[in-house]
Length: 257
Image 1 (cartoon, one colour):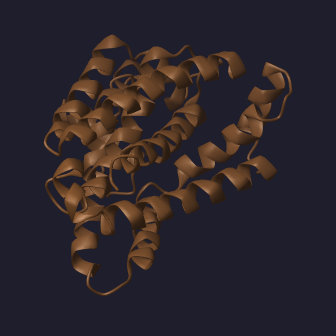
Image 2 (tube, one colour):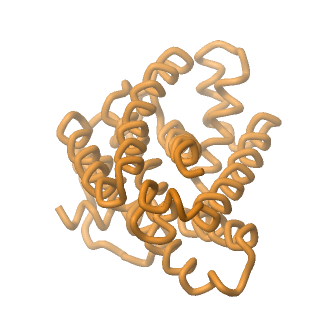
């Protein structure tokens, strides 16, 4: 269990864990079960930095710094996946051509726009939710300061877990993305869902609803990716994670003010 978790966390971040041993392809299918726990670790980094720098900078600067921190911690490859997915899905070409675009390392107009909009939206939401929530709604949206910073990486990774465990593989292969999709299933789905719901429940009803929303979003995205590409790939998992983070923060914001 811990071996697979550390491998998953090492894959999803730049943390110098250096887990020992080489995983078999089937073991990589366990990774989606640990996505939300990896999100918890990354969220803790944001909370720690927020607590340290909260009184040094205005809310908008803190939001920029914390968004940058998450990009650095994840090597930015989820944003890269979002860009590739946007270029492919919005190209209005055949499924085969879209899959070729998905593998292309070059970035198009849709990809650039997707990254810019994602980063701007996260900065705006974090600045509003983590530093400007009204006191009247404090108990409703969370029992500790900066709870959105802790929780949104969990919710985004729950969305990716749902896509990984409930999707078909868009193409054959033996890469990590293929293995996580092909070898994962209901056991990993329920593990990721359970962990996300339990953690969120500690932060109030709205946080719990956000976790449910993240799971439902994942199911919707499974349908979208299947219609557009025939299934999911590693890039699709990264794009689903980014979409999950953005949309759950938006959902959270509906109740925060």
